Length: 557
Image 1 (cartoon, rainbow, N blue to C red):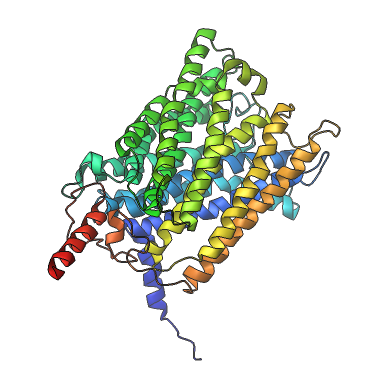
Image 2 (image 1 turned 120 degrees about the horizontal axis):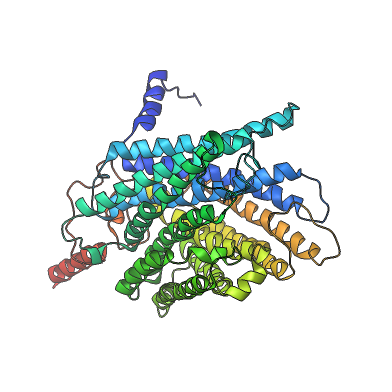
């Protein structure tokens, strides 16, 4: 067969179009592609960490590389994958369509936010990557990696303890990332406020869009605090200012956790929105207690700003203040529990269509619930003082974020990729991926609860034998490679059925969805809608189908 050659001018024009686009859908695709790339890189670092810890006394990687890999794994997964994928990727692509808009309110600012995120990501990774190359080629350690952990605690992040230039490069990258996220949050709020379709009242907004609004408010309140703190820490390191001194390192902890505990919900709430879109569609019934879900989302966002000091129960905080934060930590479990019950009752009595998106959603609910329950335990002062800085915290953290956000992301990918590309993924491969990921996830992180109870501290690169840590660590490492294989299955699925176009043609509405994105073509045209739709309920597509059914029934009659 003769090969088809594409003129260089057309190839250049396509590249330039993607580099200069202000179309919210293309921007969303670029966010997703780059965030998933950072996910793969951060996951490989996790495999290096788990290989080092698979048995006592391992020397697969050095202590210094371990600290750098640990730092870059955490920051990569949070700042370069989870938040950008859910907010920048899914949010950019689907939120305007869900509210009946043709684009974001500020398309050029949207593009600027994207490319600022790209630049910030490469700045964050630059020092670490250069150090890896230097070590691999025998140049020696260039001191370009950041090794102060993802929370950059003072004094470990000061010039005295971390003199590497990589620490400054990393701080600048995180700062730029925060500016990008803040601009994106402004764009989301203005878009929803000003470009909703006629009839799209607040109580008729899709749950994914509602969680994005809540997330955007949290970003606007929390991210500038961290960004300012990062700038102050950078000047402390380079210009001898004294914003965060070793006299009271708790100042940095307050600034950091005021952002970073709400950041947990910044990562989880959009995933909750994805789950809330999938469950009613695959249960073939309306979501149970829609307004309760909306109110509980807002309460989680509000209470999320009242719990940050439960990370500081061993730092000498006033006991009276500790009790207040213990109470708010337990209180935030109430709106979270409301959501879980609403999701369960949405499925209860429904006609469940056990496709991959629904299975990923069930995986989300089960693992996130375990993470939430153990979070209540850690919110109790005496329990936290015993388990603080142990692997119990690592396990809880991953049950909430991987069990929550990552299962939600994969559920959203299997749900929405047919709309983005017009082709279906393989459901058989998707189900195999789900079971492998669920098994691998629990094999990885449940033994870490046991390790925490046995006293294994986090952030150590090796350990001695005969402490009872050997078997749980080995199981955890096997589980990590199982997760990696499940992600590889998704990549194979995507390459064969989407890129290779072997997947079944999706059609405009393959799942019989309820929200407006299923009203458009697959993939949607640049303008989204020829005519802006008029919304009459929280399920606008169900209204349209029902109206068509009535029309056909009257015609036959």
